[in-house]
Structure formats: C-alpha cells, structure tokens
Length: 236
Image (cartoon, rainbow, N blue to C red; front, side, top):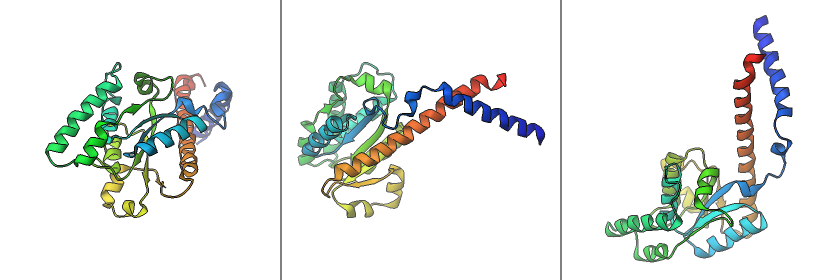
C-alpha cells in the first residue's frame, strides 16, 4: 500500500512538472482555428457558399466545402491513404465515376446528378489538399437529406474510415432526423444536430464547433502528457 502511495506521488509530481513543460500557447482560451480543418458538405450551393464564407471569414475557421457527397466521400476515402499528391480534380473525377454507376443503378436522380456534376471542392485559403491531409480533419459537418448518399450514410462511412473525426448533422427538417432508423443514427455517430431551418443557425453551429475544438485541444493535451510520461517516468 505504501509503495502504491509513493507511485501516486510520483505521478502527481510529474503532472505538476508537465504543466510547466507544455507551451503556454497550448492553453489559449481562443485557439487558432485556422489550424483545425472542417469538412462542410451540403447539396445546396447557396448554403455552401454562405456558410463556408461565414465560418472562414467571420470566425477564421479552416473550411473545406463541397456540394457533392460523392466528392466528400472520395476525400474521406483518400484521407488515410498514401496519395499525398492527389488533387481536387482527381477526387472530382473519381466522384463522377461513382455517380455514373449510381445513376445507372437508379440510386441517383437526374436532378441530383446534374447538380453534383457541377460541384467543386473549395479548399481553405492558402492551403492545398495535401496540407489538409497532413494537419487532419477535426470535424465533418454534413447535411442530412442529400440525393444518392445522404448525410447519415456519409458520416457512417467517415466513422469507418477516420473514426477520430467528430461528426455533426445539419438539416432544415427537424422531423427528418427523428424519422431515421435508430441503427442508422447510431452508425453515423454524430455528436449533435443543428437545425439550419431556424434564423441565425450559424451562431448555434459556431458554438458547437468551438466546443468540439475545445475537446480536440484537451485530447491533444492529454496525448502530449502521455508521451512525456512514458519518456520520463523511469527517472522518478
């Protein structure tokens, strides 16, 4: 018992020392959001343009955005791969191939196909795709009701490919999320739902995103402490 108590004291001493080891900037109340990447997906080009502008300009978030869930899926698919030099044009080309297959099978309506065919991948100002892969995607914000691949399916896919990324559902139809199969909701692993049908929904979204970044910074803090602990524990 006495030995266990001494070990606890060593851990406490290490934790106290770690507070001074970490850079003070790590504890900023307002982190530099431009270092954290968000993927925004909504099949409304107007929402994409207005919301990505709002988040990047007014809130200085780093936002990658697309109106096509197929492009978003290709981005997620290549995120953990070795394709460091892949371009947005290559992702879009792959997305169109999958869209063609979905259209042939009757899973994608002509209206949605034509919309997605015009879609682009907007990257944060000053960043290239490889930089986003290197820095990581902290959060995926997806509209719920989209043609071909709905938001729940997209987030389910993301949960399989990049499980460490937070996921958030957007919808202008509150009832739509309640009507989904409970298993589908569970698979999406969304941390929350934002009703974009209400006025000033952007404020609610920003508050939710900031809370996510707070969790991310806390997680990185613990990760740094764990590395330091493993490196120095034998010296105590």
